[in-house]
Image 1 (cartoon, rainbow, N blue to C red):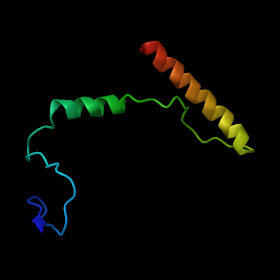
Image 2 (cartoon, rainbow, N blue to C red; image 1 turned 45 degrees about the vertical axis):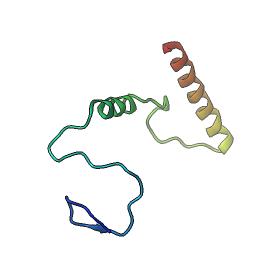
Image 3 (cartoon, helix red, strand yellow; image 1 turned 90 degrees about the vertical axis):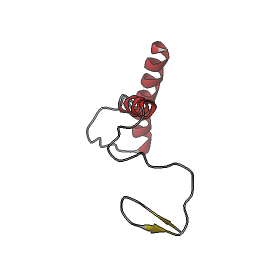
Image 4 (cartoon, rainbow, N blue to C red; image 1 turned 30 degrees about the horizontal axis):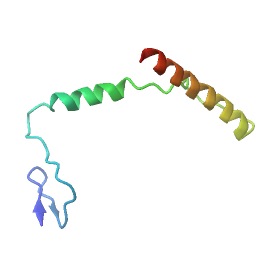
Length: 77
């Protein structure tokens, strides 16, 4: 059994080997870079609520947005 130092919770089984960073320290640089990369991710789908008459109509828009995103990513490298 393991006890969490921060919350005092007791766990019967712990899976994995990651450890929590020490309290008060910022996350490592690679973690901050990964978070920044994910924050810049774009789906190319405009925001809003879309009403479609059929799934086929929805698929046309989704495919168009996906292809536009793939083209933009290929252009950037």
